[in-house]
Length: 287
Picture 1 (spheres, one colour):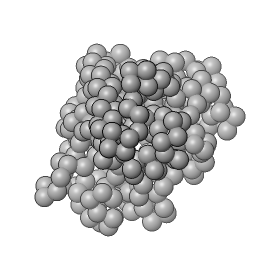
Picture 2 (picture 1 turned 45 degrees about the vertical axis):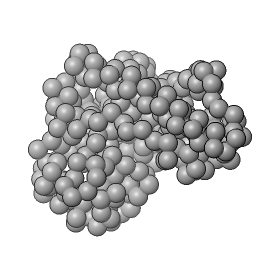
Picture 3 (picture 1 turned 180 degrees about the vertical axis):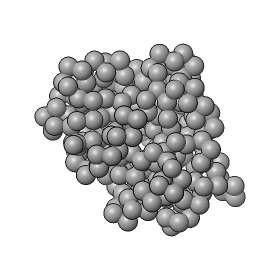
Picture 4 (picture 1 turned 60 degrees about the vertical axis):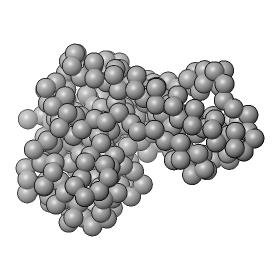
């Protein structure tokens, strides 16, 4: 059985393929159970459910929420959590995600204003309303820093995304919407869903690595500050090694948490369905 419960689309997030193309590719790869988990958006879920039915793929509603996690003794850190099996018609969840989307767009404009300050220092032509419109037109899903990075490359200001972030987008960042873990948990659970801690040991992403690289210390953080708010942990991930998988599956067993897994595929390259995720992951969702 092929399982992938962490996939992003271009239609509602920062993937490279539309939701329709994601399902076409999933069918080609013989994926049996999947979930599209776009960032702070459930706008594509109705289409995803219909496409899953068309292609004969079992489907679980999904979303990836970015949380501002306040860890005592350090500045707030950004962490991701996956919501699954929620009611897509839940109005409270829809309203909150709309508010977060509006904040994301306002944040992007503030970042662009900060970029213009940097451009003036370097005698680079300022971004105008026309530039902002071109960036917005390039966005299918949620508007964020990667879209600005792509435009900086297109304009020849930087050579690649890494340079865009290193030279401008880290310095010119504006805080994301401050969604707390408690609020994320309440939103998903009130919509009859479950909340799962995403890629806790991802060395490249928003993960507990920003607090500690020690696996035992990571799970102590979860035990002390997260257990009441989460229902599961993403154990299998494209950037989790075997030691991480073993550690987190053992931790989940100890605390009777759901275990999930997914490639976190943004189609850059296409890696959906490439992880060896055991069948019992699917069985948890059938109970």
